[in-house]
Image (tube, rainbow, N blue to C red; front, side, top):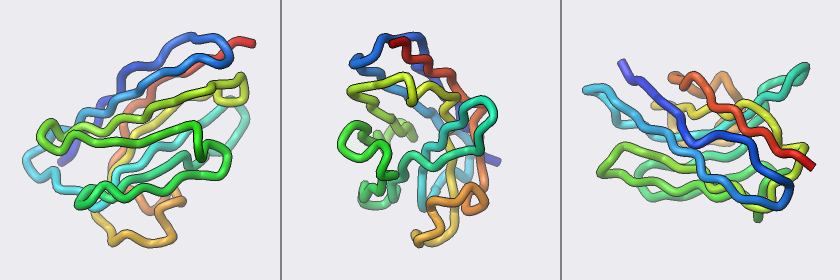
Length: 126
């Protein structure tokens, strides 16, 4: 069993930056992919980005490309999401997720992932 715990959320102003972290634990932790999703009230959960654990390759949603960056610390089983140039539309609960499935176009789908964290709230004021 794998446990994912997010941290780093908070209230920031438009234009600010924030770094979210996701610490993984579990004896069998060896994912193929680590991903980030977000969900705002009344909206479906939205893919943000993902990283291939073996080599750090990344893929981002168009809405965050160039502003958000995923980086990992393999020795600590931790993945981070750096959020820059935040705007109020980025307000959401951000979820960390992991999958043991092969890297594929389906990394943008929530159903691709096997494990989810509890989420951390990011609120961006204008």
